[in-house]
Every structure is written in structure tokens, then in C-alpha cells.
Amino acid sequence: MVLAYPPRMSQFIQDSNVVERVEPSPNFDERPGLGRPDMIVLHYTGMQFSHEAIHRLCDVKARVSSHYVVLESGSIVQLVQEGKRAWHAGVSVWTGDPDVNSRSIGIEICNPGHDFGYPDFPSRQIAATITLCRSILTRNIIRPENIVAHSDVAPSRKNDPGEKFPWKRLAQSGIGLWVDVGPVAESEPLRPNDTGTKVTELQRLLTEYGYGIDATGRYDVTTKEVVTAFQRHFRPSQVDGIADATTLQTLRKLLIARESQPQRPGVAMPAAPKDPSPAP
Image (cartoon, rainbow, N blue to C red; front, side, top):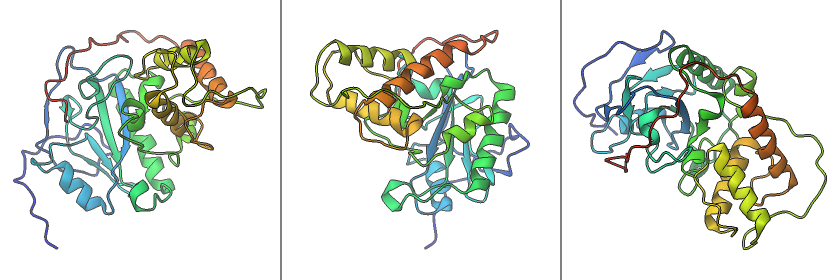
């Protein structure tokens, strides 16, 4: 099958020397406000073939893009300049901000995803992702807790890059936040349809970390989706949407670890402008 590529955009100079080539996407606009990203959002492509994913991310009709694509081989392709707003997060929220695209750098990692068998991520691909993220951090002030999964910012819609993505390995390389939790005293888990102050506290802690959830005191569908997203990222051994003792302890330890991170000059949460085009 011959793919009909859209007209080529003007070439630009890559932001990092770890980039193998530039494939300019037309799907971007300007960053509003301060115009400096303070997040990295990691995705998987969810398509069977990497060339098809790049084609879609460069298709003007698709209205989606990312700044970078990391191939299974470890090669890195840049589609949008870091200074521009790529359209990768869609309808999403982090730390109360509904315009994640404006404050983030999007990285698509080639993997067929859950719909196509969800294979492991090759070691060379993860090594390249780590190298790329380190490069991004030399140019942008991004706190560890703001290096997130697509599922973290859009838990009702997305599950990528999924429970097989090695977040712990990234954190050990200085990318993102991770905590290990030892044996935890067993307690009655919180589960769908529960109500009360313990549910309110769970929701409050998730909101404090950054997730988009209201403290209603009801363990509703949204709460289960957010807990599931949290587990995919931070407790991937059991992803079931039930807030058991280990899930709660992991969340509390993450909040402590976040507060212990050194405050770097210039770190400021941007205002939360409304996304003029929420679909991208």
C-alpha cells in the first residue's frame, strides 16, 4: 500500500543532537503565555507500524502530532520544535490545568499498544527515551512529578504508555519520580461504590499529586479511572482500580518524595488558559 503523505513542511533545525532526522508536522501552533514547557508527556503510538504512526502525526487531516517519536530501534525523529505547541494530549488535565498541550513536550514511543498485543518496550528504545528526556531537561525546567503518562492526564480516555513501560528505570536515570514500597499492613481497600471520608481523602491526595479529580466522597467511575491510571504508572504489578493499602502508601510516599525535591529557580506553574481547540 502506498501512503499519500501531506505536502512537506519547511524543515527546521533539530533541538537536540540525539535526533536522527526531522520530519516536520503541520500540526502545531504557538504556545500561549510564558511559552516555556514545564511537563513531559509520554505516549505509545498504539499503531502496528512506526511509519504509519509518523504518517498520522504529520497528516494535516488527523490534527494530532508530538514533538518527538522514538522508534523501536532507538532512532529519534523530531516532528515539532520544542518551542511550539504540539497536539498530543487532547482533552486532559494536570494540576488543575486543562491545557496540557500548551505546557508540555510530547514524546510518542512506537509500540502497538493494548489493541495489538502490547509487546515489551525494547531496551534500546527505552535507553533512547531516557537520553532524549535528559536532553530536554537541559533546555527546560521540568520537575520530576511533571514527567507523566498520557493516561495520567487523560485517565478516562487513555491507557498509554501502559503498565509495561519501565518508569522505575527512567527514575533511576533521573527522569521522573518513583518510590518503592515495602510490606504494608493490610487494611480494607477502597473500591467502587464506597463513600465517606476515606474516599474523600484518597481523592484529595490524588488531586494534590496532580490528577484531575474532585473530592466528592464517592468512589465513582472517575475515581476508579484515576486510580487505575495511577497504578499503571506507579504500581503496575496490579492494575485494577481498587485503592488497596499498597496503592495508598505509594501515593503518600510520592507526595513526600515530591516535597523533598529541591526547588529550582524559575519553576512556576503557568496559568490555566482554556484550550481554544480541545480536540488536539
